[in-house]
Image (cartoon, rainbow, N blue to C red; front, side, top):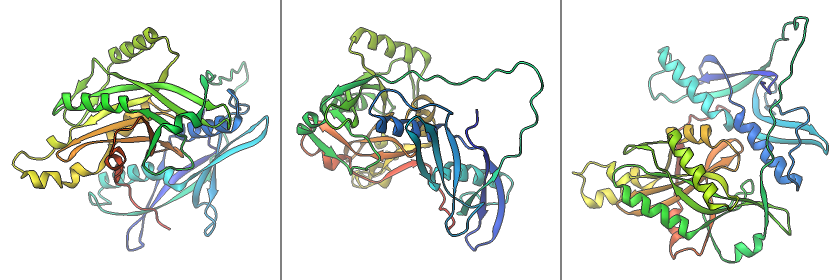
Length: 362
């Protein structure tokens, strides 16, 4: 079921202000609905998400221009406790704008890598045709309630080191230093090829404040993968092996995300001098590639799903954490239990997510 009653389009504008073309886009509302569900869970102080009526997505009109220009989208549901809604910013359309640009390049209306501006517009969908007489079935997705463990946020925080800036929209995440050490060892052992694993642990609710948070417990190395210097591919055998490991552990742990390495030191030509390689911008920035985004969106679409990336560069080993925020994948902060000295300095840095998105047109 499509939760939106509107059709959307990207209005492409050249840098000199010339209107180029209006490109209809098919929006993927999955991350928006997942984010709304998670925010509802955070506010519910219970285990059951309000579901009556399903999610509804409507445009938030631009304050200056009004309809049909879009400033964001509102994801809502009239639940038992009244209207529960979250508003996602216009940046949710970045991916659609990038795809619109690619289509215009294919039509030779834009030059490859040409910078453009964009606006988002929305129009009400046309009324559906009358339903034929006869029996009708309505199918509604039924979500299993997530398993939430009661725990103490204060007790964990006493023995944790915060890494990276906190954001009010992010739930706290606690990662044992042993998990980071395991990820580092796997990354170094893999050499020039990427390696991967599955992050497991618990979704928790604080016994005092009822705040949700994530506590990682371990990293299960992913076997049966296909690896290259710039990519790792999971296989059905990978998931079967991880599920078997979880059953053997018998700790009620769940999948919280995934880990993979970036062997950045092998991305530079061997002929590069060592001092140049250590300062190389390609090695020094944190990157979550377009392929990483696609895998995360497909396999780990839950709003609390995480991705740990360990970059091996000539300057050292650098972990960084990514997750969902307002339906978008971003680099985020976390806390390390029994953190090693100097970790805070290692993980802070600029991040590139997927592609370099084009700017919005104001």
